[in-house]
Image (cartoon, rainbow, N blue to C red):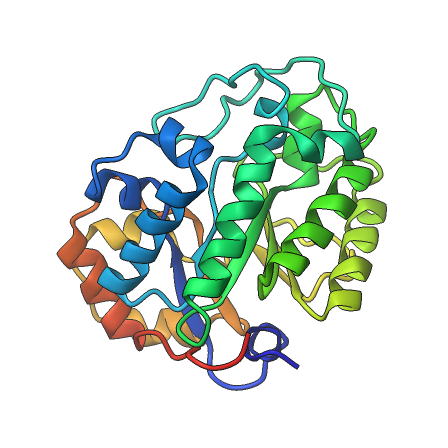
Length: 274
């Protein structure tokens, strides 16, 4: 069993892992579009952020809705980079969408990071959560399970330690989600990679993923934009295996403050295994 998979399933101490993406791009003065389209650049930027902050886990991207943008039309987003609530557009998802350049680039980033950070920090391949995708498509989950299946296999073959299904904070429940989660979890289990759902606040579906982390049990991303206080140990021990932020750390966060929090939470203990 991989180190991350063991951690996610509750073996050993809680590992605190802030999600860093747009902040990494800002620090290297790289535009987000270049991060999404150029795998070599994105891998360099994210690898640099891991080294700077001592991140225990690294994501390959955090562009929720990327699966829809891969079809050719950008989504309107708020200041945090999240798709705007209530904005929907018709889009046909299927296994074939995985061959779109944006998703191929995301897989390439995962492969590069998994190779370059092997023995240093495990990599999570990110998929937009099913409730978020359905919300952006007027409640439609058609084709999502098939697309997940292809992307999860490609992530596993790229060497990731886990697949992170990330929901937007305002995502609502949708019929058929547990079936989609079950299929995704089965694929991850076959490849011996962790399956993690970062869910909306108060939402804990019954799907058999290795870890469900509702947003109200995750760390507030804004925490890493403030100076550390005396609650670090309390926050850390409240988690379940892997404790993520409920979204990505703000892009304008002070690097020294982020580093201080990571060090206070215990640095990067996941240095061995996949």
